[in-house]
Amino acid sequence: MNALLREMPDFTTSWWRYTLAMMRASNREVSEFNDNLFIAAHIAMTAARDNPLSMLETFEILEHNVGMARKGLAGMQDKMADYAFDQMEEATRAFLNTVMNAEGEKLGGYMRREAEVMEAVSNFNEQIEAIADEFGFHFNTSNYRLVHETDAFELYQVLPLKKGVEVRSDLKPVILVPPYMLGVHILSFLPYENKSYSHSFANEGIPTYVRVVKDIMTNEKVQTMTPEQDCEQTRELCAKVMELNGGKKVTLNGTCQGGYICLMNVLSGKLQDVCDALITNVTPVDGTYSDAISGMPTMHHDFITTTLPSGNKVANGYLLSLGMRFVAIDRESPLVKVLDQASLQRATDLNPGKTPAALFRWLLKERVHLPLAIANMSSHTFQDAIADDGTLPVKLFDKPLNIKGLIDLKVPWYQNYAIKDDLVTPPCATAGNKFLEGWDGLESVAFFGGHVAILTSPYGKKSPVNGSFKDANGKEVRGPVKFQMDLA
Image (cartoon, rainbow, N blue to C red):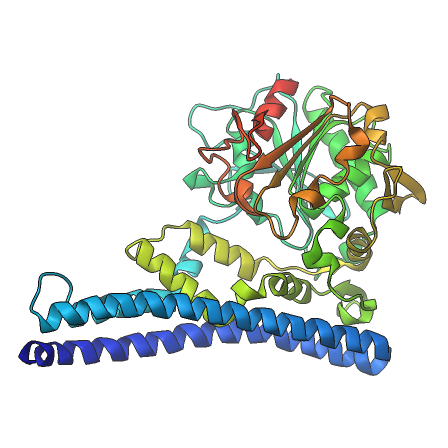
């Protein structure tokens, strides 16, 4: 008993530290979550006033919301149960060590450690802010070169960071196309940590370029951008890159939504004389195969739009981002995020590295609005399936687009997807492959991990982007960088 009493002052002090840190961390996550909810609520209330939903649509949304609430509560219950069990097991061991005066961690030490873990979680914002200088592209530095711009895009060349590597004139150039909504910086996750997809090309000497959408808040040409204008301006960028690289045609490499846009642009035939290869990363080729997104209730566009000072309506990026979070609400509720961060801090002895901070920075800071016409196009791809003959549910220049057109255009398609992706599921990413059976121009590669694994860990031991490996399905394959090198 005396041993227990001796531990009480230290235990009590640490318990208060833990409680206060838990409150700060929870308040931060709740506040961040609520900010998005308030934006969504404001848009929904305005839309309901000006253009109300039908009774049937209202009931569908209510049913969907109830399902999301159940999923979120179930996720919290499961996480709390796991967390409480782990804590009780460690606390019991520390208690027995204390009362029996045995070797090992005592109650005071146990509570002190837990307080330090939770304080690290509560101070995580400092790490997110501190990573700003290392995360993403820094186009104002000498590591990038602005080579061209159109009404809506800027085109930067990504220069090698690897010592001794120069841009090679004998290699074929590549243009990277990020998704509109999630921003460009995920393509340069942590370049100085060897965790940058764009630099995995540049560091091999490949002439590497990245297409950057201009600021939608201030640029009306971006606000009113249509898929046709995207195609025309992408062609202009490709032509410029050809000019800079001795007339070599370009490989277009699109990520997620950017991959679908690249596929559309190639199938339109407008790029035939400037682009002769296609790479897509985790691209939703047929969104109806993704229950997480296609299962969302359909609403008219007033419920996702924001009117900018120019008077132009755009799709609200915060609202769309919130929709993506609701897809994984069992892992994205504030309490679950706090406990997940605590588990990470504990597992890494309070040194989780730079990757979690960079990932959170991307998720929190890189949300941008979308041109309404681009958002409408994306919506169609998730609500309408590819036709039985391979025709996409969207058109360009009022002409149908058929996946089989890649064969006629002789454009090889390197397609990668993530085996554990619950947003762009493997069936969603590979839905078009059945229309290309027997064609040797298609390479479909299953990467390990989740949706952004190839972007945050391009040199993963199991699947390096610049090498050959057995993919998640056990097939002998090559990475996208090696694919690009082999095209030269």
